[in-house]
Structures are given as C-alpha cells and as structure tokens.
Length: 72
Image 1 (spheres, rainbow, N blue to C red):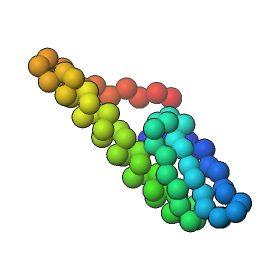
Image 2 (cartoon, helix red, strand yellow; image 1 turned 90 degrees about the vertical axis):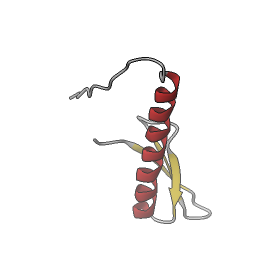
Image 3 (cartoon, one colour; image 1 turned 120 degrees about the vertical axis):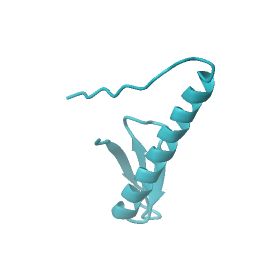
C-alpha cells in the first residue's frame, strides 16, 4: 500500500516533519528525508494498529469479521 506524506523542512533546524494524507493522525519527524520516511512507517503502523484495537474493543461482544477492499 502506498501513502502520501506531506513534508515540511524547518529552515532553522534543518529537520523534516511529515504527516500522512491518508492517516492524518500519523505524524513524525527526522533529521533527513530517509529518517523521516522510516519514522513515518512506524507512525502509520502504530496509528493503524491503534485503530484496529479500538474497533475490536468496541465490538468485542459482537460477531464481526474483516474483509479487504482494493481501490485503484
């Protein structure tokens, strides 16, 4: 899956910060673009895992299942 990252470089510190367009709660920073992108992978994974756990706990007494949806 591909994600779009909105990137800002702080001119004063030289650090990069990023926010995922598809997962707005996923934000991170890094000294380099490569470091930022690795940190964004971790941030996206953490947020998606959190959302998944929230859904599970909200529906713990119900019979639910997951199905993947591919979009072009």
